Length: 135
Image (spheres, rainbow, N blue to C red):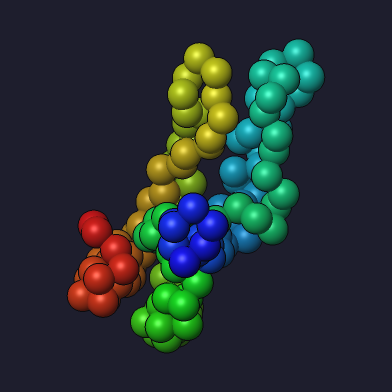
């Protein structure tokens, strides 16, 4: 027990599983957002994400106890191999959220062969079976 009779704080990490976007999608996304980030258009608090940080989130896990990270890593290791078989992604449109004071850029992707959808479903089911994720 810690001071005041409270249990010691558990260390945790904020986790999500993401897929790196194909270069063509990143290029299209950067071209789409460029005019919106000009000084005369961009909200002052808006900070553009670096090119190498752009991704598609497959499963957001939230705060996870530190001791859970290793088992989670094992559970998602298969996703790396499957991610190589996600062809045909392209940018459909971008959307700032919320519209009035945007803080997040969301995009719609075309998933030509539904490979991305299959990868996300497989990952979601695996993480839910382990009790780490609620779809």
